[in-house]
Length: 407
Image 1 (cartoon, rainbow, N blue to C red):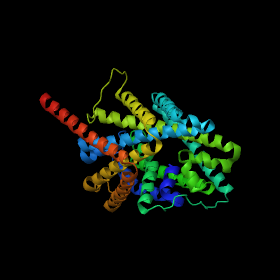
Image 2: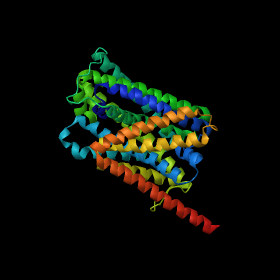
Image 3: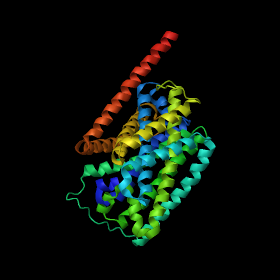
Image 4: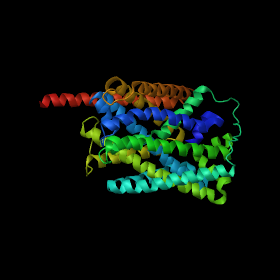
């Protein structure tokens, strides 16, 4: 993420994470208000039911979120492979990166079929270690450069445009969107009407601090050209001047810890939301002869799709597609809050409108960039979204006809 944001925004890329954090804060406001009023294990899927009822919009928007999270899992899986290979011969990256990513997803699957309590304890302890390690990396990296911010100019002949800056912000928003997984904890957390919202605020605050420190540390040790050239493993490259001979091992260790915890939490949240949508007959489901409950089945589907994406797509395209899905889903969510429930959940309508405005500007700018640089990606996004809408429309229509015949 650091490398891709730097590629779009140049020497100001650390500031993009601050702006992205602010926009995420506006976005999180509606989720916090909905969590305070309707805490549940279904999370955002249940929120859409409250906003739009059990129809095509709810099912399609929920699937956009689910797919954006699965896409993020494949992004994280490939990142795991990329960083791990920094310890070995990079010439073998072609097939080893997806292979290592698939291996990580398989490990995440095994952990997720264990008890929820184990997942909670494991991810909590390792996440704390991850945060402390990343902060240590940043502080050491900044101390080596005497906390300077002298980023060398990029070799690009043209400075980033406003559109490119906004596109960079779109990618940072994808980096922050993990807070949505917290909404799935409403049935387990103590005092959920208060604590789910507090947990969201704390998580975003931690992420803003960590991302800004990391971006500052990388920018202080590498030129923009160097960051772009090593965009898939920018932290590992920045570790060399900051940590010396042990820097690579330290950074790879952090990457492994970060990717494992991120995928485990995301897979759990997605499989739970898909199971809830299946139970409400909002999405099609087939057992394929698998034993166990619905969530075990949706866990398998989640892992299989993430593995396929890990094998087929590179990091840039994975991140871009996830950003488009998420921003569209987010706009639909805020619009529902503004039009239907802002009074009931005691939400300030102007803050909700600001969230819609920011999301729309960022989405349009990001699409504009991709139209000129990766038209195939936009085609894939449009076709896949239309396919989701069509399948859901026919599926829910068939369910409605079947229910009428039964009555």
